[in-house]
Length: 82
Image (cartoon, rainbow, N blue to C red; front, side, top):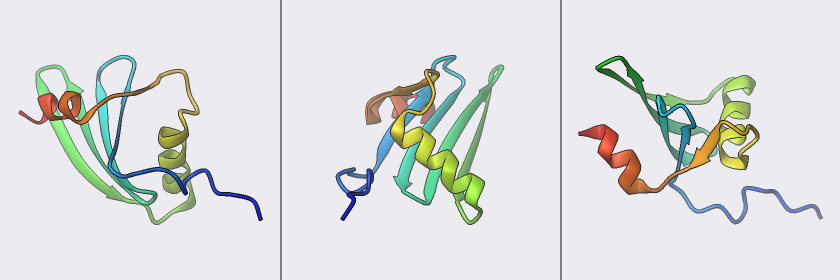
């Protein structure tokens, strides 16, 4: 049987875009929280993926499917929540 790439992942996982404008806390393969920095404002949202493109987006974050996705730790994500 083929092993899923998600089997060994412990949640939550943390990612950001390399431009430092979007931070993600991935809670499960179908749920994440995002902090988006727009000028001096913060936009926070929680997403539960129901559609295939949303689920693919989470997989891309988890598997680092873009050079713009960077692994961060909980402390770096937490700094954006303040």
